[in-house]
Image (cartoon, rainbow, N blue to C red):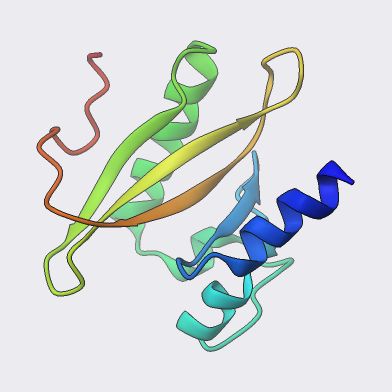
Length: 120
């Protein structure tokens, strides 16, 4: 029952949700993500969708996630046109081991944190 509830939450979210494993392989896209990116990219590498600089930052974030079980969310981008902040969020198993990550879009007033603030 709980899995059905979680699936319903994610699939009903109007924000795009792209879930990746620790190798940056896309394992799930909610309907909003498929519509935004005009494709179902499940099974492909997220790195195919980003430039070299972005891929470097993805790797740095993954290393930061692995460094501590407390490192779970980091601000990555501000989109003024859409009034949203974008984050990478760690996904962990019951023992706290990193099993993947997802991109979280928050449509709201501007984030005041520094982009990629690893010094928390």
